[in-house]
Length: 322
Image (cartoon, helix red, strand yellow):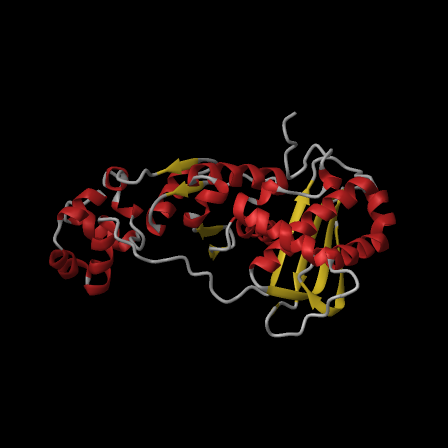
């Protein structure tokens, strides 16, 4: 169960790195709203394909994804694409996809309700949709009748419910090979911290605690953390702390082989609720963060990156053509 929980946390971090609009249904299922990402990340199909590829690459798991205009239909499409697929229900084609399905496909139809419907000769969603609402209510009761009548016509106005504000923000990178050298580790650490701090600033939040999580080649893990004197969302102090934490465990990591590096920040506070402490003798790091944020927010996260990462094979920002 601990391995299952760790994998779930890693997958959900990738979900939240894709969009802040994530609603978890269970340890292995979630809704993601990508409606507002077309300008930055392209259409939903491309986002879904990259999401599946990233989970496989970083966590080593396959996932099934359903893309649709409502939460209900996305869940049905995801189930239909299992165990390792992507199913897209095109806008305008929702009922063509939904109506041939068995009544058990409707959310809330279990064995008892399915039996009641089957006994009346109702086996498909189309046959449920053909009934008027009062007939379904008299058959199944008010709650189930109204609910199934709406779903059979793909009426599901519910929006993503992200729940309470998150207590931490993090990201990680996994590797199939063992024995990353320190230079590679520093580059990966920079990329991960850069992404985490960018998400902090976009959420108008600051953090007090930096947590470093490592996984070794023997599948054992290590966690190190440090609380800062001043809450921050700036890349440089978070990166310096993360590197210091890595220094303290590097001998063990080098001996056992390193297969995952993760960084999270906790102790989150709204950035407007505290007085930020800047080093006014050198505001360049703060100004650099702000400039990079503006470029990424306008042109996408791959539009700009640190020069340290330019020559890495897995760099997050592509080289410009000659």
